[in-house]
Length: 259
Image (cartoon, rainbow, N blue to C red; front, side):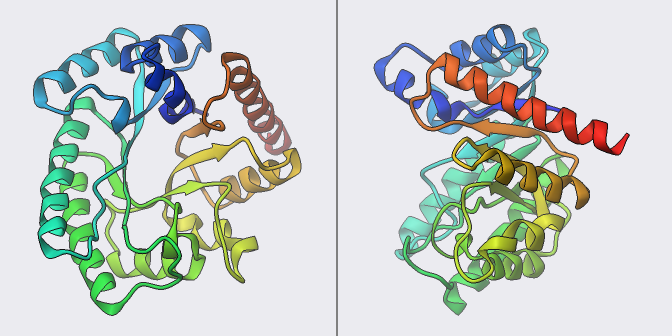
């Protein structure tokens, strides 16, 4: 079972200038002994082809698999048409970088209002069109793309399931953030979306019992992807290490249960 530590964990260090993408790769490989990286686009100094190739070589040198690239900033939807087209071009640039980096999954946020619970018909139709386009490109290049349950209707299980069903493409999936789900189906959101979950960000907020329940639901649903830990922003090296040990303990316990 592949474990990783999401790069967003080290955002405060990035802001202070004491961490960059190469320091992150060194940290997860040699401080924690992990073999899978989960990058965040804001940690990359650039997403142009030349820099992406440098980072890709750094991944290879450390024998790291890039299980995820999370894209913050450009979203699929923007209310302004020109902004929407700008985001589209920006996302294509990110997909190009992901392909050079060898990412297995790419998180592309849907966008829209933070406090909305449903998408408009115009938004939904646009999402389906664009996500299918991105998913076909991803499928052709050996990876998958999709949103994460971060904000707005993405947090509502029925809305996210409706979107997954409508896109209906093998190159499409969703990234599960284990802390997030809202609405009347929040208690069974992970179960409802299990068929489409392509990558997991395990939050350090839930109780041990809640995390065990989530891991069990995913594994029973056939999840075979990586387990990427997203600690609270600003976690220390020691806190991140404790979270890694906690998740490893849960996964090993589940494996022994089914053996």
